[in-house]
Length: 273
Image 1 (cartoon, rainbow, N blue to C red):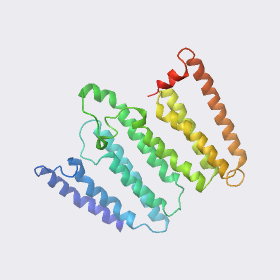
Image 2 (cartoon, rainbow, N blue to C red; image 1 turned 120 degrees about the vertical axis):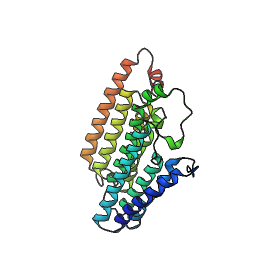
Image 3 (cartoon, helix red, strand yellow; image 1 turned 90 degrees about the vertical axis):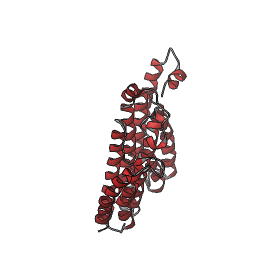
Image 4 (cartoon, helix red, strand yellow; image 1 turned 30 degrees about the vertical axis):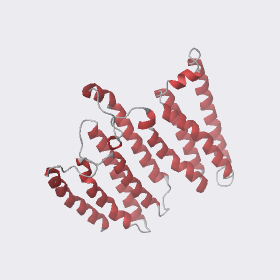
């Protein structure tokens, strides 16, 4: 019932948005017409969040709703990089998805990765969409003023601004959960994500995935040893994972040293954007 009421509220608020947009100086709040869609967005998630109850149907409803809001966020980025859009800012849409996911996870029936991975990967996808359209957009538009938070990720450059938030949201919840709910699969997943980030950072010459992956590896190892291997986390799979990760890092280090023999390792690290 709450989901139906939320959907009805969104439909009823849309004509009001169009009517307000016709009024003089209708761009109130933060001075942007796109904020007129905020009430409809709030109605969409407020009811289901308030109606969370034990049981699988409410949990999967919130999970599906969070995915739908994340899809809306990606649509916002795709439209914004082609020109203006009346949809709410990406950070606001992501905040709605985050609150919806936290409400669904609060019942503890699903692991945190069921919610954190879609959130992080969608945020990372938003940065990738903005990065792909950046060069064409710059060539067509010419010099523009500095981007604002409401425009993120469109108009931003650099891996830290575009990809850093998505990488952190993807990996950090699993790193924290390793200490509170240690699982062998979770620890292996974190190591795999960290290695993938390092490889992408080297191949694409991007600083954010490279350095964040390097930071995550020792932190995850420390947490795993603190929760005592052999009790909460199986020793054999973990040691195999560490050996594999060590071999991959060794190959990367040898190859990177050969390519940086002339300019030096420090110079090549400074080339990461």
